[in-house]
Amino acid sequence: MNSLCCNCLIGLFALWLSPLCLAQVVTVRIINITNGHPLQKQRVSLSLLYDKGEQRPAKYDEIISHETNINGEADFELPEPPPRILFINIRMSSEHWRCTRTWAPNTQEVVQRGIVRLPGGKPQKTDVLINAVPGVMVFPARPFTFWERLLYPLLKG
Amino acid sequence: MEIHIICTKQRHWVCCLFNESYVRNDPVNKKDPSGKDWYYDFAAQMWVQTFGDPCIIDPALCASGGVFAFDLATSQSFMNFNSVINEEVAQYMQAQDIAATSNCIQSWINGIFNNSIATVQGVTEEIGGHWNFNVQIQFSSEDAAQDFIKDWQAAGDNGFSPATRYGSDSSGYALHLENVGNVEQVNGIWTLQATAHIDLGNPDDGLTGILMHVGVDGVVGWMFQILLGGNIDPSSSSCPY
Image (cartoon, rainbow over the protein chains, first blue to last red):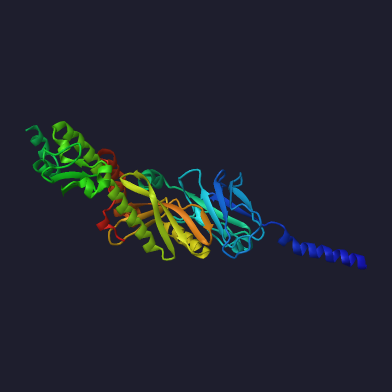
């Protein structure tokens, strides 16, 4: 009985410690807001920057870059401890998307609640509804309208 | 006579050269027996009248190849020199234009964002009659950098891509701050790189702004650049900041 209790306690202690020991993974997801389809092969960079006096790991990459996969997702393993703020930079493969290219959410917010950073422009009735999921940063992108596409070469400068 | 015909087509100060030049100068030693001559100061890009030997007064001038009026006694030498001067003047005017636009952009960014210091680092290229510049924006804290990114992105959310244009009520011009890149942090200083130029029409201001941007920035600007080799950036006196 004592041995069983001891094993249980060790197991519970291991479970309690696991989030602290295992590296946290955050995901950047890029989707087409008009139909919810994932956008793959979009370049995403995550800058891990620590403020003066902020505790930082002994070894880590300051900038990690990935391309979104077939699900429109790029996973980033955060070092322990993670920085307070995550700096995200997205390079879309086409200019003809309206979406957030640079963002800087609080790590805690991303891990605990997740974020959805809607693109600019007029929301459409057909826009898909996107809910925040812990650990996931969703960046919906809106394709240019016909007129935006037509005028873009003249307006982009 | 030939020189006179050419001269009437030149700028006033070049014409002065012939009225005032003394052909008895000593071209080897660059000395004027009468003690009076004009020389062209390439550094200052202007003609300067001198009394006495300028090589003694200003040795750097002679070392840098200042041209004396005496050297231009023939029409051919004048034409050669004039083409050099025209090129120099064009380069000087361009440098002045670039400096004025650069200063305007720097003041403009610093006027918008209080918690940062923007430095225009250098011109990249002229696109459609507008000079584009690399801009470095520095923040003293992580929060200030985060606030900037959020403000910049939010300001561009409802405007035309690529974000973001900051309009000026007084002039109708817009500062187009774009390509905000990755953040860097060195010794507690947070730095962002971006590019910027000035639009004469702000498409985010409605139909008039769109027409101005397409017509002036899009068409007239390119015509200026391609046909005249100039630009349509505002002068320093019309910079809204």
